[in-house]
Image (tube, rainbow over all chains, first blue to last red):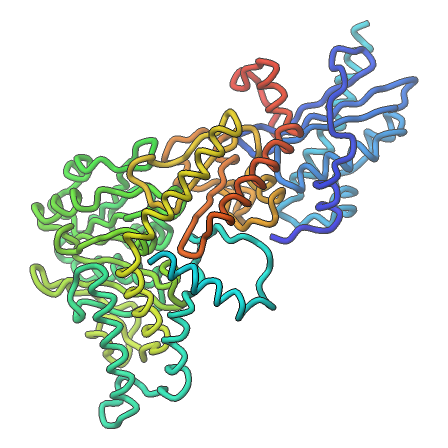
Length: 127
Length: 423
């Protein structure tokens, strides 16, 4: 299978790879997927005044899954939570030129963003 | 003898230098490079010797016939059969189909029960599934966690209406070698026809169809340094005389079991490939398994959480199927793009279904996604292995840094205790 140039670029030079302090109240963490499905994404956001000031990811999965999560962190940085919630997997598919068999990677990235936002909001409500 | 193979390889590299890339080829169980000596043997049969084997009335036909006779002799002696017991086909898939469907249809009045294993190649599994839809019954023998069948389970599975047992010799995904002789003895005792799929492994392993009690044996040319598009099926002629229902109808070639004009250049190539395997297999077995062991040791010593899939004792020398836990197989391959290998990961297949072979071993679904198959062969050098080893270790380390599962493992979290969110 040949990969698109943008997938290769994100795979070889992942943006924002790493972890934020999941215990921090200003950090939301989303972990989606399952090892037996071959994809697990962890996406974290750091929020200040409703704005995402930092984002990090770690992904177990194919090159397209890694690229999708790398791209997602790049995009959400600087967005408000509302803007980030409205990101669609199809935007990722388009940007990375993912083939049909890899669309689930973009779906997972969208879910990871939403899950990280939910985690952050749950922490705020708990306070 | 292995030195000769490498010398030839170097010569070949010069000839094809323009077209060849810098990628190290460790995917020999997918296909092997055609040996330059095989190509040389084939060339005249594309050109001046273009006769049809079945043209009995002129020199063009006689030349072709002589060449095919020699190939038949070479292929049969590789497995200890007689030249008249070799049927040439279009490849391993056709050989397996002809054996399975040919026996099933010819002997349907005797019974409609077939026994096979859970780790067959699809060239055997799918024809059996197709026969099941036509009213036949099949029993799939389980394997242990190394992919081996216990021959006693075969004895228990044979019924009065069993007409065929079909077993893979060396598994193309994990390299596990079955005890084909023990199962052959059981088939002989019970009077059931016995097919062995030996499409992979004849370049290093020695099988004798008489000693192992084999009635039908499938071979593939392109898995033994011959050309693509040609294969052979050994069909026993005496004790018992096996008959087959042909897959195609036509001109009566190959004892009426495989109609169609013979592919003379391909057959000549397969014959030469078989002769080279007979000559080189012992030395190659030692050389290639030495390289494989070096690679395996480097992985086991270089990283923790590395698992070798398959049987460590009964295995093909060139095969190293290894799971790097917490690293997904396709991304591992992508990270070592100067090495050509295969992955058991579902992501590489169009269906997104993990390998049925890995599943049959009972390997955890999570580990299935982390498997990579290295398959070494005649043209693999120590430099190739060293390069692939260091590239693989580098890629695996990089991807573990990126893996949330590795991070959790390092934090001491039990991954099996987590409730994963499925989509």
